[in-house]
Image 1: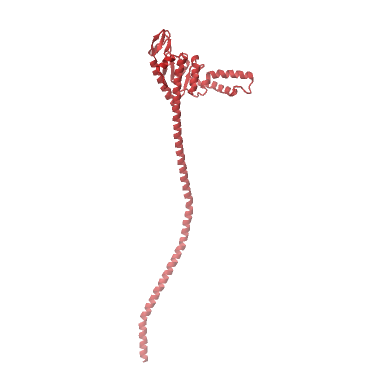
Image 2: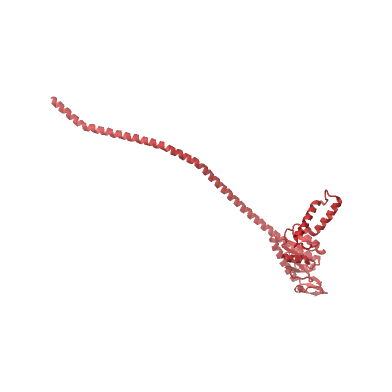
Length: 332
């Protein structure tokens, strides 16, 4: 929270309540005393409650929630509009229409009508192509709708919380928020009933300086929380992109592996063809080998035959010599 002290609250007039004749007994615990017929609010409790409201809005905005600022009294109109715009939140600062939250479907129709009128009016609000008298009437209607609905044109669902200035004046908004279970943050003066307010900030709801101080604190909490939310979303997006890149890389690796498998599959028929060629060539090789073996066997047989013949010749030679000798003896 921005550095807010009791002195800041005192200077803004946050301690000044209503007259002692106009007070609500339920606000007794937040009253310090009275002076000159006016109740004095205990600023220590105000500061404590303001810190609680700040922490709540900070956490709410850090989770992506948005706050609806409501303040239709004259002192609060400009402040509510300025701070809601600064913190990128919704606001109602002219008049609260009955059913603005509980009957939002009907309010949506009026918002659609406002958007159509803005389209017809154009950026310069010159109503090109429309008769002057008709343009004046449409501009009057557009301004009327913009005063009431200008701050909630982007509202698509119920807000995460409602910040209200003067719950006594905005009792319809309080009742609608209670009915829908929307948490209420409010500046509560000594004449107001604090029951049903989730995060009350006891203080002066009539002083423009006090309204500006409280509203700016809530707006600052929303801005701080929004920054946290955006950084969180950026981190989540970064992680998501990283996971997506990893998944894409895995997909590419898988595709490459599949492509390599397909190449291997395509290469297999060629290998099979080569194998079949080799298989076809094998019988011829076998025939050649058989022929070579047969030749070798034949050569060996011839060699053996020659050896046998030589041995037989050698054995037969002595007998032949003996016969020749006997024949020679006979002749003699």
